Image (cartoon, rainbow, N blue to C red; front, side, top):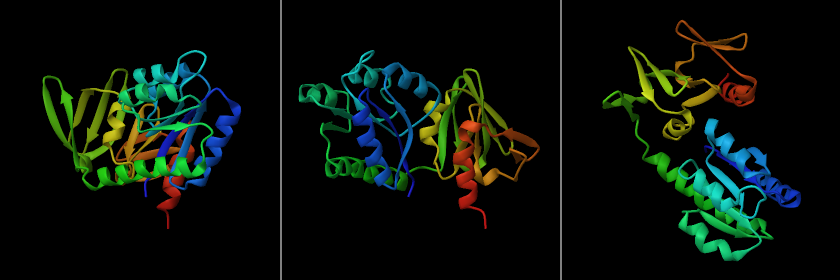
Length: 231
């Protein structure tokens, strides 16, 4: 079962502590970060991807509503708040749920279970290819032909078995289309196909003649994937 990656965004330490405890109790949730300010989340999502944000509404710099508007389409949102007057506005932003504080674990679990069911349903119908924009056309790319993807400023270079494709794209938009059990980010500038890895040596991944660095940010997650597949 693929884990749902998530962030907690709240300016109340007690609320954060409770949500952290709840996330730890659910084996298929993976907490990637905790933030107490909206701007920090927006900056994080410019470079990283997650499936879900537990988002407080009343915060000092940007409200949760504003954060949801600015990050719309990047991930799912479950609002967490002590005030129910924002519920209608929250659902207008297509929030997955609206949890009213104090949040019980039973209510929390019910909310995230619905997301897990949705994710599994999507995985069952996920295609073995993607479409990307290449110059003035849309190109079909088979996932089993992708060796690795390199970030190059505003572009991504998708290295296939027999060719290289440049697309005006960001990792944050592309990653949700790639199956997490087949592709993993190992560096701010690299995503690799797990099946394409030839070897791992001295903190670098070898794919054919290319050595790809593993950064400290992604090292732990990559090592876990490697350990799970090592006999």
